[in-house]
Amino acid sequence: MMKSLFTEKAPKAIGPYSQALKAGDFLFISGQIPVNPETNEVVESEIGKQTEQVMNNIRGILESEGLTFNHVIKTMIFINDMNQFSIVNEEYSKHLNNHKPARSTVEVSRLPKDVLVEIEAIVYTG
Image (tube, helix red, strand yellow):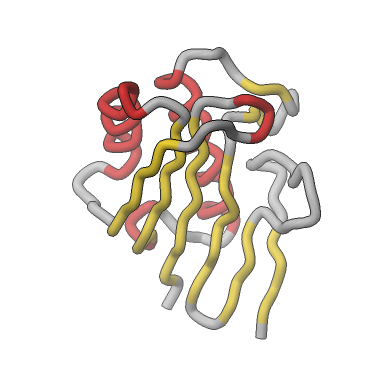
């Protein structure tokens, strides 16, 4: 059985998709961009601050299900400039502590709302 999830702790979807979809023991979190859920606006144009907001949005979705970053098994990071990878990696690491999920990182030509970073996650809830 699948269930679409919504929380006020993350931005509302800007298209025909769910913030996250729960399927069995897995939670699939849609790509989160650096939109502040309270203002519905993109945060500063510095990639470190944008990564922090993205991770806070993911945390909000996790917490709405009683989960933490320790439940994340895979993330996919999309950035518009691989030269900024170390900044993204540093901020990303702060939120995971010592947990190290599997991960892919790719450079893309453009992201929604012209943000600098987007992250999606697969979470094991069992």
